[in-house]
Length: 120
Picture (tube, rainbow, N blue to C red):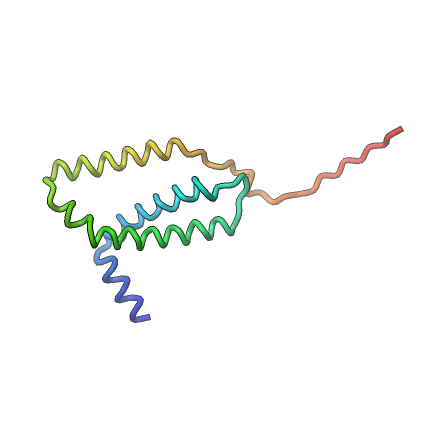
């Protein structure tokens, strides 16, 4: 358990890095879920797969951010940083508007319907 906590603290040194990694991990999970796993019914298995992809995407994003992105991003002036963040959010919203969310009635339980008819 102690190893896990040290690994977690090293991977996410601040709550800001955890929040940013979680948001990008969530974006990765939603993209993969909507692109590959979405069906016309609710499934706990696909929900579990989505959560696993969310955790893996969060850890992967934190690792990429520590290794490559933070040093490159810190070299830009403040105006370019703000522009990059706003452009990323805008493109994310545009992609979100393109996704169709499944209706709620897929989460309701199934029931049988019997129809009896007399045929003369």
